[in-house]
Every structure is written in structure tokens, then in C-alpha cells.
Length: 185
Image (cartoon, rainbow, N blue to C red; front, side, top):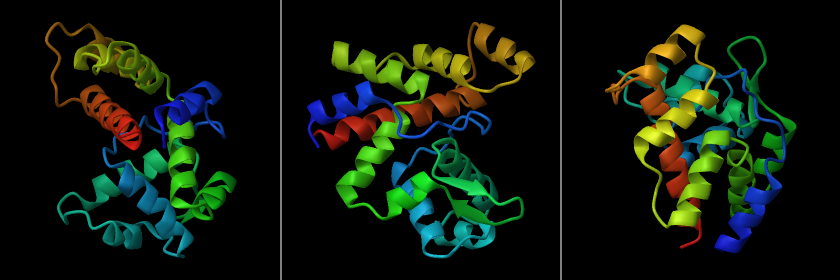
């Protein structure tokens, strides 16, 4: 994929609405988000089976699987059927039936619907360097569905903890931006 192709996807925006009812993504590996969607397509739809398939360390398996499921659901690829089973959305079905390069295009399109990610992408495109982490963190806080009390505490802290939820979400946003730019290399 060329940078011009990525820029076109940036201008076009997401193919399907993002699910801002789900937590803002906290799943650094785009590969594992894609693998989760593919795993569901293969018929592995229970959360415990997906946890094993994605090969998370046993002590973090539940938490990490939840982060990746939330990311895939936030991006519009999967839903929960109300029980412990995960199902593909129409976009998820389209994703799994696509070629590898089209899967990357679909993923980039969906990511470009995330306001903080778009701003970080714009900044890097215009300045040839990544946005300052704390500035990106502020954008993520603004974009996230944090509660008002948590948002106020994390946004106004003079020396923010870099291991808090907004920082972990900003780290994911930064890693996704890096993944997008790596596609153009």
C-alpha cells in the first residue's frame, strides 16, 4: 500500500460506524485484532477458546482477551450475542472474505474513524514525526468514554501517570499509527 492510498482512506473515513459504546481500544497489536476476527470466522466463538487461540500469557489471559475483543467490537468487526459467544458483523464477514491487502485497507479505514488516531496521523503526516505522547494522551482522553470524574482526574493531572488507562489507550493509538505508516514502507 502506498501513502497516497492511506491518505485516500483517511479522507474517506470508516466503512462502518465505530462502536463508541465499547471501551476505547487498549490492544497494541493490530495483528492480534485481525487474528481475533479471523478466529471467530473459523468457528471459535467462545471467549475462553479465543483466549487460548490468541496465546495470551495465562496470568493476563482474561484481561488481554477482553482488550482485544473490545478493540474488534469498537472497530465494528464483531459483537457479542448476549452470552459468552462472539459473532461477526457484516463488516467482519466482509473483512474475513477479503485478500490480505484489502483486509489492511478495511482496518485502516475503520481506524481512521477514531478521532484521536486521525489527529495523530495528521500530525505525523504534516510534521514527519510522531505527536508528543502527552498531547496524544490528551486527545485520547477527550475521545474516550471515560466517566466525568476519571476524565477530570486524568486530564488535569500536572504529572500524569504513564501507566493509567488513558496512557495505555494512547500507547495503543500510537502503535496503530505506526502500523499504518509501516504499511506504506
